[in-house]
Image 1 (spheres, rainbow, N blue to C red):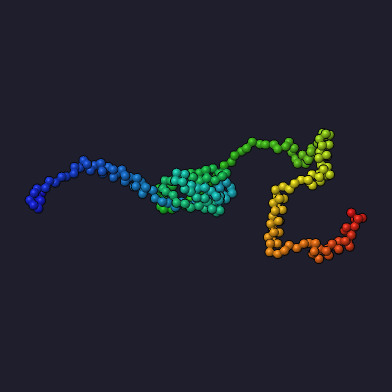
Image 2: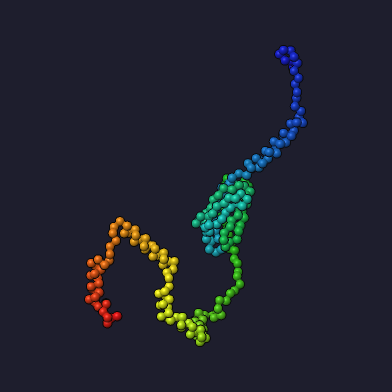
Length: 225
């Protein structure tokens, strides 16, 4: 083809061999996109129930897709609803019941509703005998008829002496709960008396009236003591 000034121009054509790798690459990269488009989103919902005679709904059941890392929990009425993809393997798990797997089928539309029944997972433990007495009455009689050694009985009586217990209680320091209670009472008193002068109970006429009445009743008499 000649140029405007009459000089011939050389035209180069791209060979088809160079375009073939480009076409192959476009086909390979387009396959994952097409595969994703072939898995539509489905709204998976239903009710989880117990397969035993009670046929009660199960709240708090875990419904999840392990590979995708998403899931939900059934409400107090046993109902659940979550989005899934066609072909997902859904796991239904609940403590005390056997785990189930449900695979989302094809050609179901954009929603699916199911009723899932979980079978109890029963574990039988070996029998354990707590004590060899058939009834509680026989157990009490055996305890009452038990003869303790004389030395241990004497030690027990010395440790349970009323004077010793009173002395121990008098010299025992306050524990954590008593210290916290005392500290809380002091804080309440400080906040209560923050904006006025603290009164002295000795100058309270009501306290004096109660004291005089108690004297008349003889509460402080020597004979009563």
